[in-house]
Length: 297
Image 1 (spheres, rainbow, N blue to C red):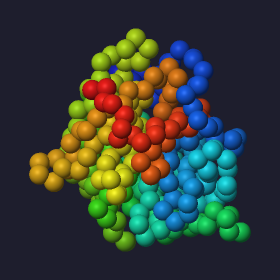
Image 2: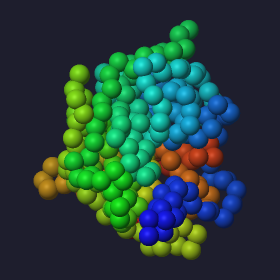
Image 3: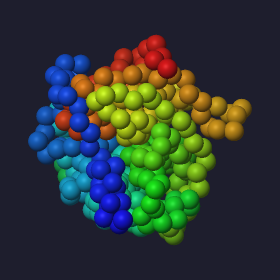
Image 4: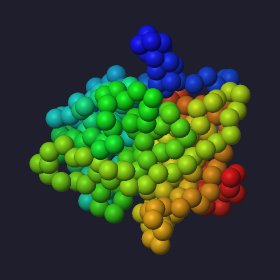
């Protein structure tokens, strides 16, 4: 029985999906550096115009890359005082800090989930290393087992900054939902225990070429527009702040993606009112004026 469970778990958690290969003709750019093998997070700098920060997924050294929207590499930085097990997303605050989430947890077994705070370096300066000045370890209050059988809902690939705190959206493999958690930035804190503060249904109709609906792979909050963009393999969801209801957000619209072309979409960032998202194949796609796109819901 344990062997059967393991085989099923591997199938569910491998994090891979098959998309019939079609040309990525909708891509507007491609990350040109071969050092960026699998971009899994993206955020626009709040200090340097036209600069975006990204990083590799698991299996890389702790490092950050500054790139242009065209995909051109601007600079690479080694990150000291940080480990890289499974970096999944990156966020930025108003004070000039970047936050990298070592939050990948495919098998629900990790006990060392952490977010690193990194003072944003100058991509045009001479220094090529930066030091993480704060580590924020955490665990999920509702995770009772490591791993937790039959409830594969404690992986995460989406991290964003909002209202003076970090927020994490989980990537579910047991259902089509995602849960929102708040991670306060408290220096010298012990392991934070995160309670879910909201849950969202990302139910999508099954399609022949991909059956894992609702897998959240990235998110970014538009502080001025009060909009949250949530990326899955097959759609971009836009949520708006809702101060009147029980949930902090309500769904505004869904923009469907042709996953046969966009493939393993992993990262998303606001660029003004446009959205830029990237995939594991290093293509970058742009949704101009995302609010004007008709909902596919």
